[in-house]
Length: 443
View 1: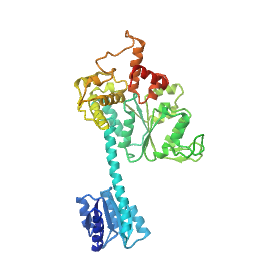
View 2: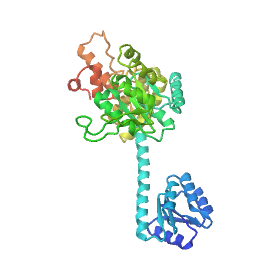
View 3: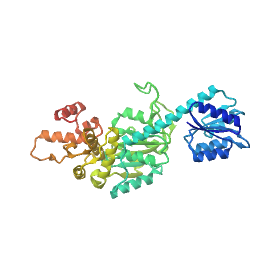
């Protein structure tokens, strides 16, 4: 580690420097606040020892400056005038630890090992986050399409507010990614962001997942569950496919949005939480209102700001850039170095209707990257639904029902997130879908 020792006693500076250097660390010393501030202005340090009394100056003031200037640097306060009050104050100002003089080599060793491990862990986390960002790039919210540009601008404007946001648009257009971006653009960005897919859970599980439950609230409730709302305190909760939320839960959700109050399942204690709600749907909520499947008061409470994401087929000019960024992400994920798409592939991408939108584009590119054995993705790596080598089967063509069934299953699989979702769209169970995939040789 790069270590800075700030103490007005020469013997302390020399002793700490010798100790740290003997363990492989690089040490710089300073005898005053001014020289210490000069050091951190020109050099980066992982660790600093700061004496509380620096002549007529207070080392505690220096601690606050250090932590504000270099948040990743760990600060150990050292003093010959140890007290609980000064220890508490040091921690309040951002110190990582506190040592009373005289301290032993064993005490120093323990503190240094702990802080060195912490520094290493933070570096690994930062590295892993960068790796994840490269492997799983989100939808790029930069567009040449006028409608999409308005969508992005509106999302950025509303991000700074506390308004409830409703995202509308076909499946696969990037509503989840836009919800995450709104969170990241907001003042809540350092707090949790969580997603709940409303149709993926039963009524009982969805209520428990949202609001939590207490032990014994129902069969299988073996321990307390705080719920997603509590886990998102200060952050954002994204409710995907809000149109599928059961009627029995809708009044509780309305109450939480309006009053920020709720109760866990099986508990009468009223709790409060500061959580922003973003919802999304590709359903016709207005039809659900007319049919009595969605409460009118909840609909208007959710619909404070409505943002529509256009289908990919209406964003033809964005397709080449989206494809390139997606290719870069899958190159990292599969450890490949594919340079580009052939011109024919880009042309086919722009001519295709993309019923599954961005999700389908990602699926098509992932498949091509897996199968590609050189540095260019050609049309032979595209699925039959896109490839120009096979004519698309249309309703009314002089073909067998089996051909139409195969093409339809392929399209649905390419446009959905999971086999469960695909089976739901097709109106068959997952076992039947598995047999159909095997019958038609669908990967």
